[in-house]
Image 1 (tube, rainbow, N blue to C red):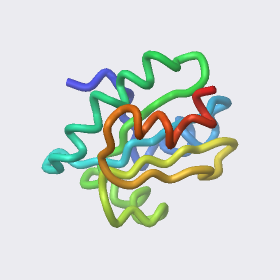
Image 2 (image 1 turned 90 degrees about the horizontal axis):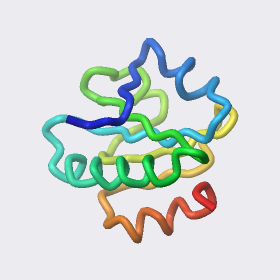
Image 3 (image 1 turned 30 degrees about the horizontal axis):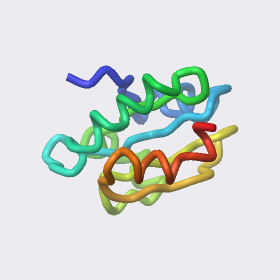
Length: 108
């Protein structure tokens, strides 16, 4: 079971858009193999960088409104939010070094 916080259509604004921290949202689904591979990598990044970022998960099957609002057409998709705005998108499962490289500006 993931240790990352689950966000929903109902609490997305409060947990992500209104957060004072940089928030990385992992848009995923239960049936998605690549999503299951990237989950543990994001958990490691979250633990190693907990002072800088928060990583949360949003199940696109259970929360279609938020997925549609942010045009999630391919998963896994990770979007980085700062001040309620998307500042970076990463699509697809990647190994940890590649993901850290993509997110380097937010982990520094």
